[in-house]
Structure formats: C-alpha cells, structure tokens
Image (cartoon, rainbow, N blue to C red; front, side, top):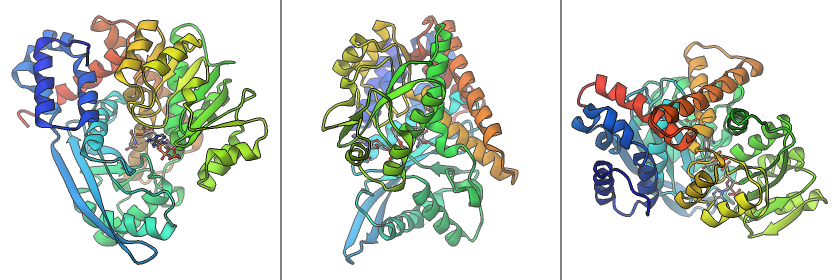
Amino acid sequence: MTRTVAPLVEAIYEDVVRRNPAEEEFHQAVREVLESLGPVLARHPEYTELKTIERICEPERQVIFRVPWQDDRGEVQINRGFRVEFNSALGPYKGGLRFHPSVYLGIVKFLGFEQVFKNALTGMPIGGGKGGADFDPKGRSDGEVMRFCQSFMTELYRHLGEHTDVPAGDIGVGGREIGYLFGQYKRITNRYESGVLTGKGLTWGGARVRTEATGYGAAFFASEMLTARGTSLEGRTVVVSGSGNVALYAVEKAEQLGARVIACSDSAGYVVDEGGLDLEVLKQVKEVERGRLSDYAERVRSARHVAGGSVWDVPCEVAVPSATQNELDGEAAARLVRGGCIAVSEGANMPSTPEAVQVFRSAGTAFGPGKAANAGGVATSALEMQQNASRDSWTFEHTEARLERIMHDVHARCAEAAEEYGSPGDLVVGANVAGFLRVAEAMHAHGLV
Ligand code: NDP
Ligand code: 2IT
C-alpha cells in the first residue's frame, strides 16, 4: 500500500493487520474505508475517544463450523462454513452467503465489513454480516447441493432469526440454494419464519425484483452518476464482467436505459459482440442451463468467444464489474480510461484493486464503489423483509420504483457527504463517510457495546 492516511487512522490500520494476520482482502477493505475517515475524526473527537473505528473493525461475533455431507458416490465430504456477524447497530445482521472454493475467513470478513457500510447507506434498518463456505457447487448435482445446504443449515440455524441474522445469496448461492436452506430452517425450527432469509421464491415469501435488484441497481447507479455529469446511458457502449445474477440484470437494465452492452465474462473467458449481446440466449445458457459462455458463442454467430482473456481488454464508455473481488487491476483500469471509459459502477464487491481505483479517480472517471453501486440488492432484501413482516406482496412496478428511488438516494447521500467532508465528486470518500457516520451515531447512542 502506497497511499497515506492520517497517523491515528494508520495506527488503527496497523493494529487491524496485526490482529487479523493473513487476511489480505479484509485488510484491503478496511484500509480503503480508513483512508476516507481522517476528516471525520477531526470533526468528531468523540469517535476517537470511544474507539468507534476500532470497534467497527472488530466483528461482534464470528462463527466457523464443520459441514459434513455425502456426495452422489457415497463419499464423505467436509467443508468449512462461516458466518461473521459484523455489526448490529442499525438492525439485524444482514448479508449474503457465498459458496465458492476460494472462501476463507479473510473473504467473509472483507465482505461483512463492506456490508456494514453498504447497508447503512441504503437508509434501511439493517446491520451487516456475511457468510458462506468453501464448497464448490460447480459440477455438483441438485441432490448434492441440497444435502450440502441441509448440513450447512443444521449448524447455522441456531445463529439466525428474523430479528437476529438474515442471510441471502451471493456468489454460488441463488434461488435454488435459498430454497434448500429455507426448507431445512423451517424443518428444524418448526417455524414458518419467512423473514429469516431473503431471495426466496415468489410462491413462498419471496419479493418481486429481488432477483433483478443488484444488477438493476448498478445500472441505475451508473445512470445517476452520468446524470450528475449532465449526460446519460443512452447510446453508450457498456461492458459488464461476470455472467451471474448481478451481471445478467445489469445487462438487462443498461439495455432498457438505452445502452448497448457489448461484452460479458465468466471464469473461463469472455464474449464480445459489437452489435450488442442477446440477453435471452445469455439467460438461457447461464441461468437455465448453468452452462458456459462458449456455449453462448456457439449459438449466437455474431459473438466472439475469447478463452482465458480479460474482458477489460474490450474498450467501452461504461464499465460494470460484476464478477468478483480484485478482478480489475491498475493496468486494466488504465486501458479502460485510454479506451474512453467515462464511468465505472461496481456491481461486485471490491472488484477494482486499490491501484485501479486510484487510476479512475485521477482520470476523473465517474466511479461508483461497490458499497454504493451494488446496494440495490440488499436494499431490496430489506423490502422483502418488510413485506414478510406485514404478510404483504408488492407489484413489480411498485418495488422497482422503490429500488430506483433508493439508488437515487444512495447516490445523493454519497455526493453530499463527499462535498461536506472536502472531496466534492469523490463517491469513494462519500460512501465511506456517509456509511460510517450512520453506524457510528447509532453505536454512540447504544453506549460501550
Ligand atoms: P453468481 O454466482 O451468480 O455469478 C458470479 C459470476 O462471476 C459468474 O459469472 C462467475 O463465473 C464469475 N466469477 C466468480 N468468481 C470468479 C473468479 N474467481 N474469477 C472469475 N470470475 C468469477 O454471483 P453474483 O452475481 O451473485 O455475484 C457477483 C458479485 O456481485 C460478487 O462480488 C458478489 O459479492 C456481488 N454482489 C452480489 C449481490 C447479490 O445480490 N447476488 C449483491 C451485491 C453484490 P463462473 O460462472 O465461471 O463461475
Ligand atoms: O453483497 C451483497 O450485498 C449481497 N450479496 C446481498 C445481501 C443481501 O442480504 O441481500
């Protein structure tokens, strides 16, 4: 890390690194927030005295557990499950579950930490948490995924509750997994507690627009940033990375807003089509068949599949990184800027490396950090909880209008905080400061907890 932070904040960061060894992603996420907080501490000495930052960096509770299950051949498999309950100042712990072989404590903590500020930015009553397992769903049968989810929930259920901790999906966890997890929770507890998980199916407590929400929200956020600069998404070329839940619906909404999405990716490569991607085929291949982008290129002749390459080689005006952390590095950012990229809206959590963020900020590229740009997913989860609590079910149009308004407000909160704390136009500073202030104020009111 080369950039400097205020000495007091630097000391806090050093302590976080010392207390959480070998958790690089967590260090990175903490560093990025702390770099914005110098001016906040200068104005709020009480947060130094009460060690509010130090408390925010220490999760309230961390659960790590064994997940044994049997695969289709009868062989015993053992995975490691996690739930980090980071901060409950604003509401029950809220945040997704990630099933991916790369999952370890450092990933879950970085995601949980980001979630605290993101959830605060939505203005809704939700605290921050995150969980998951180092389970790889790729190539596993439905039966294997179900047995894994049942074993995972058999331990996790005791830590959950609609007023305690409310998980949802993330990488590798979608509607199918939430279904198996909910079924097992209901069976163990003998409670039809709809509000204990979000991302549910529409016939059993799910909310319209939750599936689309993160991607739609990231496109709305791109649109907000461009509007603030006197322009729009209309007619713009867009590249979206990933081709999972967030990516597919970012493509859909960007197209609805008049943009042309020319490329997307998966972990094996990317597809590019200057005429624009065919979303129907893309959804069929990725959502329905759980296939690969090479299958898409075989069906859509105008598309070119590049195996193993980086989708950030494709020049565009707007980039929506929606795959995973640190997928876009400094060199890729410089290439994007040279190619005419004017806005980046992070659909994923921490997809840009610190070097990439620096490139975008110095180039004057409109940059929406994940904790603001992808907040539409968790915000719509909060709307799902609201519908569950009132046993209600809203229309698609009503829910989408709420989402659009929320993304507008998130952007406004970030822009105003950036202005007030001396970094006008810098949404990284704005998101960190606005998120921190809301959590810190509630923690202050709750005493030393
Ligand atoms: P999905 O599992 O639906 O899709 C993930 C996509 O990213 C897939 O295309 C996958 O490729 C690709 N990908 C995942 N890991 C890697 C990797 N290590 N290298 C390259 N490509 C990778 O997940 P989501 O769409 O739900 O999540 C995407 C991002 O958005 C994550 O950062 C997540 O934390 C974030 N997010 C998700 C929210 C949600 O509501 N789901 C809300 C807010 C943020 P392949 O198909 O080959 O595996
Ligand atoms: O990173 C995220 O915000 C999510 N994976 C969604 C969390 C949620 O509880 O909806």
